[in-house]
Length: 313
Image (tube, rainbow, N blue to C red; front, side):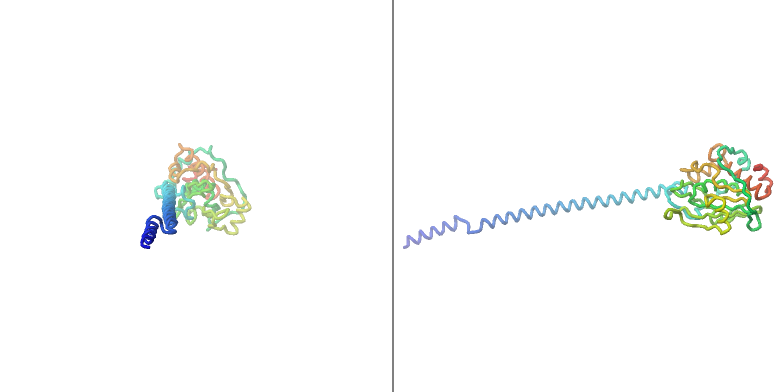
């Protein structure tokens, strides 16, 4: 019996020390697989975090680039001094024009106007036979235009130069530009100006701003019923329209508006009164025709010094 017990005990010991307990191997394998999956999951999580960080940094960088571009465009557009390029609209009454420029434009020597060649002009005032047009007891020059209109923008330069020979503006016209999609031509606006002259009245009607609204532009001023009737009868409501006291009319700019595209207000102002430049010659010649038309149709050739200098027309 003792021997059998030793043998039995020996076998039992060998069994306990030489073999794993039932299920122990499978548990170890499960732990290994679990650890591997955990490591893989952690690696995937870290990779996802890196991708998210990358995309986040990319989006932030893109936003910064867009902001920088917008700032550059705004600064670049506002730094040319013209009040036109880079801005889609300008205030209806315009921005103030430096006194030096309005002073120059309002005092172009009559000799410069007289000597300007009219070879570049493409149209001129035509005779009409309407009842006398007056305002405040004086012959009236009625102008119907629009601030978006590039043709109006072109003719206003000559209008201002010519009208300055017969009276004064207070306040002075502001600096605007025709609509961006309509030439973006720097010019002046007669909106909210008052013109005083002992010889004639000047009635400007700027019907719209240069601010787009749908397929057209924002309304600014509305002609009276009488003005509307004349305007429709003579042009079907095209711009610009100028009625010289019911005797003559001008229905377009006197020279090609495209010659002023791409220039700043200061560029154009610098050429006015300088007949050695094509732009200066055209504006001076157009102003000369304007002065002649006013003298012969509105002021009975007054003032004498002005009207005699430019001759009859």
